[in-house]
Image (cartoon, rainbow, N blue to C red; front, side):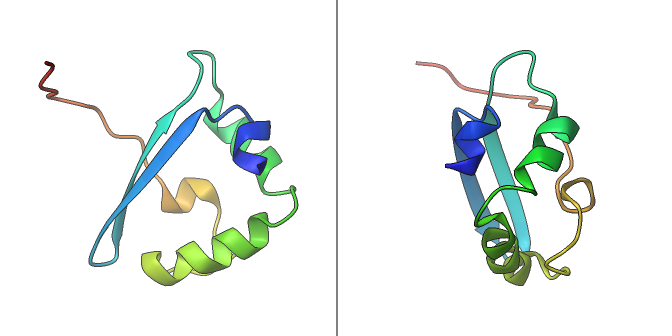
Length: 79
């Protein structure tokens, strides 16, 4: 619910070892830093961060910018 409150439309997370790849669908004007700061204050977010930190091998209170880094898509096959 919190993710939707900050403007995230869809999200997928993939795991390989302790590397996570997250694909986020959000509006074009989505401000990642502002939205993640707001999300950190919402109910149950601390619980989510504690869970995900186990996969990422980091502290549960690590900032979003310490855990997630933007990637550039270089290929997509369309139907």
